[in-house]
Length: 125
Image (cartoon, rainbow, N blue to C red; front, side, top):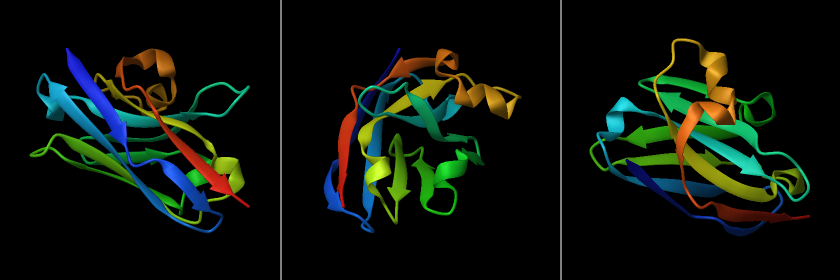
């Protein structure tokens, strides 16, 4: 069992930055890939980024703006979000997954076993 808790969300103006944190407890954290997803009102949950060992994958719409990182010693995963726009407004979730050989698997919510409760990010124009 892995427990995940997100933090760092809030209200920011367009063009601003936020850093979200995902704190993990339970099983050996380093054995899991950890991804970030987001869900805006009325929309499906969508993949944002994932870190698996030292590999990082990003959704096209965040490339160059978001950076995912992890600190296994602290059981933490972060996503630094820069150049935020109103379209980034959503609840952001972190999730833990088995390590897959296919990187496209990480975009599928069904491939993740453990989820946090989410943190709200609101970007004002």
